Image (cartoon, rainbow, N blue to C red):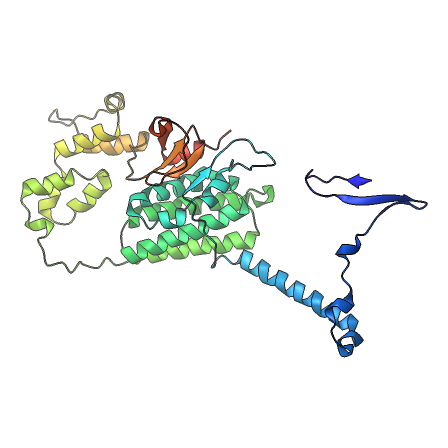
Length: 354
């Protein structure tokens, strides 16, 4: 009588009916005699010790494998350029239908090394830390912390993008503080001591970023202060974050005066917010002028700012494939560009909400 397991393609087990009830038959092919391991009479003399040594070797290999799986310092990063995304799964093909699986399979390890994708990955890590961390699997949560560690190390080496990483670590620490309190509800995967250790690492990373010292570049070319005021103002217009303008204006009084230009802040407001949003938050000075700078920061607290990335993830609706913009995927559509759409970090998360 064949016994079919959960997987219908497995050979199953063979059972026979006896006077004492049903008993499982043993295949002689799977029986390995001890004598097969012994080549001499001296080896056959101690068969029991040989079996014990084999058992010890298997146990040692298992312990070594567990240590490698639990070692966060030696993670395995996938380097797939595209993945197949499907909301349903079959026995023949498994679709990456969860956020954790997609986060594990995509090549985020090399994406943080690319300046075009760095801000995209950081924003994605921020959104996951804000609300999606409990939905990740244990492997995905460990992979999240490993990628975050590489991001912090890159910032420390390059001395760039310090502020957004500080904000990311601060948000992640607040989220973990609230989640660790609900550990009894199994909101996080793993031992409580492991997450306390990870929170200590976050505090250590924050301390390293606070103590970072920006080295002055050794370039002997023309500096920003040596440019005409019109070119300096033109460079400021390329900045899309008002906080960067404020920091640039604190360098010297000359740049501080240019950073207060009303037209500069007006362009920022119209770039990030709609006319309807601006009309709801109008602020007029005593002289009758619009306070564009104050309006910008007030609008930033009320509405999300516009996001712009050099390179993003794309999704092909025809092939159900998620891929980076500069990588090709095996699309079978006649016009691949018509069925491809760019995904913002929030769209990437919403893709797995069903």
